[in-house]
Image 1 (spheres, rainbow, N blue to C red):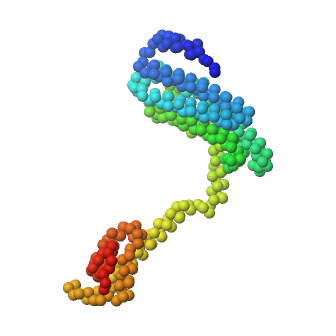
Image 2: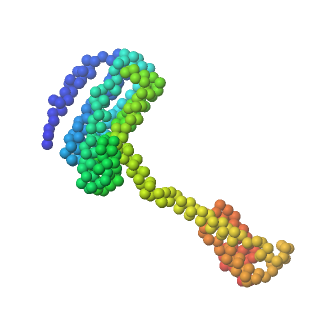
Image 3: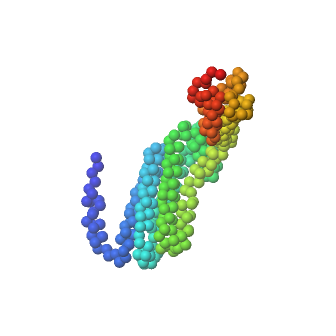
Length: 339
């Protein structure tokens, strides 16, 4: 295995001497410098991974290139978390430092500035490979490509048939991951940090307004991929129009059928009182009940489980039990007495 001499490479004694030789007038100075220097170092790592990924992509080694892009994306995500720690600074102490460092900023870092151009260089190899795949497969989309503006048609081929272009599809997903990490993971956090620390209407140390930082994360790195995803969505909407809303429609139909069944059973379970007695005098003995009426009552009080869905099912059951107790001398859980 490869052995790296930590002492020779890192030179910790030089780092310690540099730290001890520096003087920090402001309370937040050391923390501010440390975060920005570490961001610079991690930017170098991310750019190195992207450069390696580009070499693999040009060789057609898509899975290897995708893995390196994902590694770079995770590093950039970490950079965003790293700069977010500056939100812990004491605002008053930082503002004293801010006045003296006017004209310098982490935004001015040459390494950070190179992140977006390096990411954009990862797209052309994919477009070229998609074109070759379309030509070899006699796809009509290949003949439509006359400029970079037509590249979404090629990307559509990859998104629509990922099982036929597995390596290219994985590479495209890695590009999406990389774009999200740069725009959302780093630049959006940079904007949020500026708002939190100095306010949304202020200007930074480079005399740039905080609101202007929005452009850094609102502008897509790969509009070609975004256009392809939009096209695929439109195509699928047209092809599957007959199924639009099918799941929710079916759920609504089931709900309506259940409600209708509950209403019907509730009505059947509540027969008129006059049908069960021929004497209005409550003290008189009940008249014999015709066989047809008896069968009707017995059928009515056999309440299905569906009634439990109704909000008034408990009241319905109580009323039916009272009728059975009055007529047969039993509840719906007992055997009716002989009449």
